[in-house]
Amino acid sequence: MVFHDDLFADKVVLITGGGTGIGRQMAVDFGRLGAHVIVAARREEPLRGTVELIEEAGGEGSFYLVDIRDEERIDEMVEEIFDVHDHLDVLINNAGGNFVGPASAMSPNGWRTVIDINLNGTFLMSSAVGKRWLATGFPGRIINMSATNAHNGSPLMAHSGASKAGINSLTETLAVEWGGAGITVNAILPGPVRTEGSDERLWTDEKTVKKLESRIPLGRFARPEDISPLVQFLASEAGAFVTGSLIVVDGGDRLRTPDF
Image 1 (spheres, helix red, strand yellow):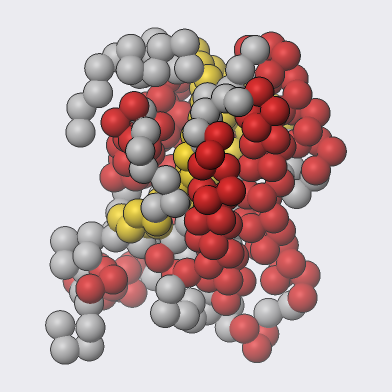
Image 2: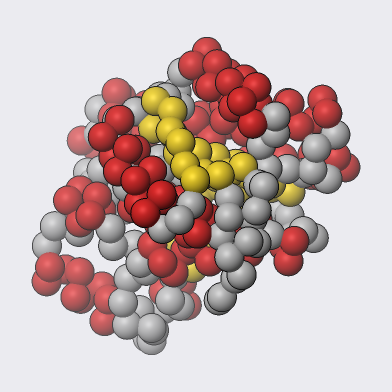
């Protein structure tokens, strides 16, 4: 999908988890398309790297340090963004946590950490931004990053699957509650994605990866550049009448059956 360079001119886009992987790809792409892109996460070095890439591509970027489990810090950040830029057009809830392990061996702290980052963080960010939009009647866009492991169980990732299922429900609920104000809320559900981070945490065995890829109709895992254009669509005027949608991006993996 090709978009013109000023598609998001004068728009402000906030991306959590924008220092690496899918978040970094989206940030650079939105910057190329004219938006001022704000990336937010806990680690400064990756965020600075993303802003540098945005600027090298001719865009404008800035960053904030935030833990999306910290309600007070989130509110401070969002307040400052509205003070500095006067508005925020798009919120992309991309930050997430995950690790592999059987549910029987998962510690309560490990469970809570992933639920807090993925589900509670998505709610806290959406609430902080959405309340300001509702107060002013601004028709903003929220795009949540979920995953296909929200469906049909999530072996070795019970915490992740549960959190993503919650994100799906939250997406649909906010779409209904906030639709009357012109706010759209959608979610992207990637299947397995290869990034530097996922290769380090999840896809550590190349033989297993090849086996899994061979069962996907399109023959490979998703890449960050497969996800970013759909997010741009939902943030653009072309996606203005799309809300409450859970859009799967998995190369057909969900269609695979044992017989297939």
